[in-house]
Image 1 (tube, helix red, strand yellow):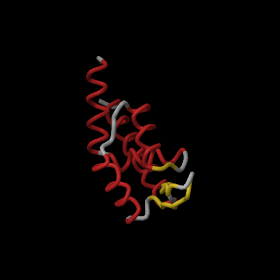
Image 2 (cartoon, one colour; image 1 turned 135 degrees about the vertical axis):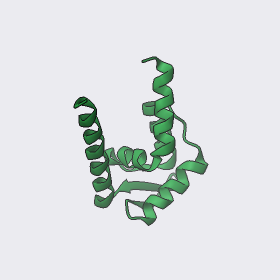
Image 3 (cartoon, helix red, strand yellow; image 1 turned 60 degrees about the horizontal axis):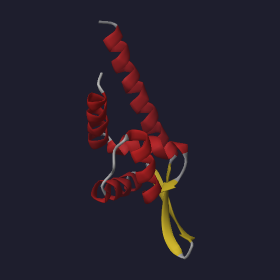
Image 4 (cartoon, helix red, strand yellow; image 1 turned 90 degrees about the vertical axis):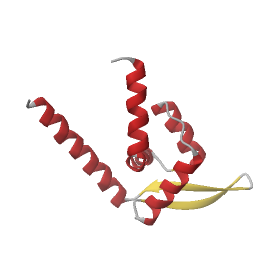
Length: 108
């Protein structure tokens, strides 16, 4: 597989499964928007637009998959997001489905 195909697949996964990708990222540690974006960029090679990141975080919070906490850091307000047990369950289901898909592929 060429690097180009790998990058294309990463972009498609991000575009279509951004909510799950964010939950996976937040499982490692709570993060604020800028850190989420920079971490995502360094690990996935994809830059998230604010118009995609913040509405998705808001949706995840409304559904109870993440919770946020506003902190004052250096005189600035920072909203930090953390995955909830309900969000961790979604990530576990995601991995289970992926495993089923991979197992199905291997049975062919």
